[in-house]
Image (cartoon, helix red, strand yellow):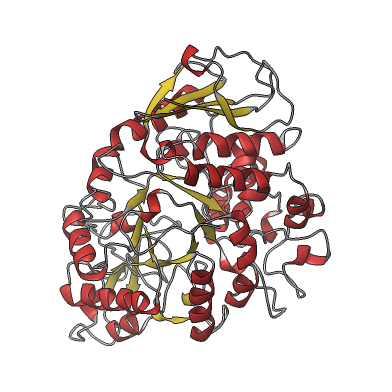
Length: 543
C-alpha cells in the first residue's frame, strides 16, 4: 500500500481522514468505555479501509461533563482512555501504517476543574483570574441575558470572587479570555507538547468563537479572530506539514478564504456547516426540521467548490460526532440503506477537498430510536426539559430528538453480530443499536459489495486520479430536484459524477464528451441504461 508523505505541506489534499469517537470505538478492558488500546487493536481495520489520518475526539483529562470537550489538563490523558504511554504507542503504531493522529483540542474554553480556573476563583488578583471572562454585578443581576448553547444563561455567578463568568456552553466550561497574551502562550505550549509527541495535526473545536465579545453578545467571528488565528499559526503550527482544521459554524466563503489561505497564514481548512443547516427552519435551531430541497443543497456545495478552488481548501463531510447519521437523514435507511449510503459517499468524495469519514459511516450505520431516559447527551436532555416546560407536544419533541440528537452518532461502532457487537465484554456506556446483528464490520468485510468496500474503492480512486483534488467543478442540471450531477476537470482528466437522490428509476442524458468513457465506480453490480433508486456512478476520460 502506498502511503502519503506527511512530511510535506499539502499532503492532506490527497488524504482521506477518519473521525474516531474514542468512547464508542473499541473497549479493551471490559469497563464498557472505548479506550486508546482498543483503537490500537483496530488500526489494521483502518489501514485496510485506506484512511490517512485519524481525527481523535478528545482524550485529554476531563470530568466528561461534555464528553471530553471540557478539558481539565491539555497535556494529560484521561485515565478513562488509558495512559500517556498508550497514546505514544498509538501515534507510533499509526505511523507504521501510514496513519497520522489528529488531536482534538478545545481552545475556546476549558473545564471548571482545570488548574487555571481553580486558581482564578481564589481572587481577582490571582494571575490566572484574567485567563477567563468576568463581569461585576450582584448575584441576581447578570451582565446581560445572553443564552448558552446548551440552554440557560451564558453567565454563572461565582460567589468566591463576587463576579459572573462567561460560558457559551455548560457552566462547567468557562470561556477562555483570548485577549490575555499570557493565556494564549499557555495554550501554545500545550499544542507544542503534542507536536513533540509526534501528532500530525489538530482539529480545533469552535475555533471561530475565540474572538468573542461577551458584552456585545458576539460569539462567532469577533473583531480579533483572524489576528488570533495568525498568531496561533505562527506560534504553535510552525511546521508547514502540520494539518490544522477549525470548526467554524459561522464561516462563510469569504471568511473560509482567510481561514484556509494557501499561504498557510491561518489554518489548513475549516469545517463549515451551511449545507448541514439546509433542512432546518430558517431562524430556528436544529430541532426544527424541514424537508431538504436538493437544488438548494447543490447550489450551496457548488458555491463552495467554485469559490474556494485555488483560493482555499474544503472539508468534505456529512457526518460527525455532533450530527445524526447521514443515511438516516438524507438517504433511505430502510429499503435502500446500502445503495443510498454509497450514493451519498460518491457525491461527497467526488468533490474537491479533504473527505472525513465518521466512524460507522463506512458501514452504513443508522440513527437509533431511544426513550429520553436512555439518552446521555447534555444538549439533548436540556432541550427536552426546556421544550416540555414550554408546553411542546412530547411526541414532537421526541421526533426531533430521534432525527437530530448527537446520541445518534455516539452509539458504539458495530463490529460483529455477537454479544455487545464486539465493542465490549462489559456493559456499554451507551445503548447499542439493535440492528448490529445485520449491520456490522465483520459482515461488511466479508461482503465484496458492502458499503465498507465501496468506501475503500472511493479512497483508492482519490489517490489514483489527480482530477479528484485538482479539477475545477461544474454543476449540471442545477434545478433538478432528484439528480445531483457535476463534472470535475483538469486539462487532461475529466470525471462525471451522477447521483440519484430518490427511490425512483430516472433517466439522465450523459454529456457527449463522456460517451464511451470509463466507469470508475458504480453502486449497483449490473449495468443499466437508467438511474436506479439511489444509484450513483463516476465516469472518467483522459485527453
